[in-house]
Length: 157
Image 1 (cartoon, rainbow, N blue to C red):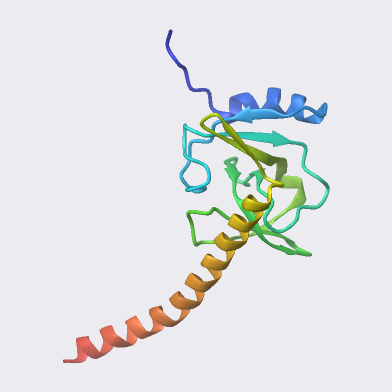
Image 2 (image 1 turned 90 degrees about the vertical axis):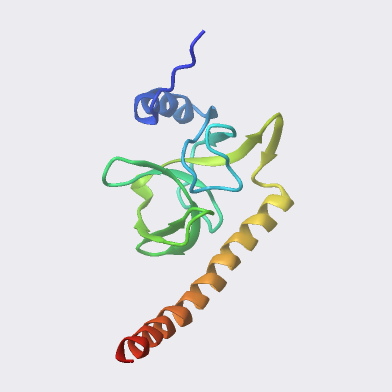
């Protein structure tokens, strides 16, 4: 029997129907942006209906304006929308609106073990990931200008 991959855009209407009725759905993401937490095509994510307002560290499934489905972490909450970032990325996405939020991840199946996202070890992991990005961002704010100066000096020689 052949395993056929079906795109999330094809599955979404059925998934939405289940989520809207209060049920959960499980799918297997295929991108690498949420590594190491979610391994593409290996781990499975459980989705439920999203609350009206997300909180920092929530992991929503949302739809970008270009029609792409994205599963990224909330790293900031502001009046104008959410700031999102994948655990394996450093570029933030600003201004994601409530209307774009489709569902909320409530846990992940890693092999046969379920990790609920209200678990203390998961929350600790989230805080560590966000702090790591903040430290790296500060480092890059210093490194980039210094690198430019270094190259200008080297070019003048």
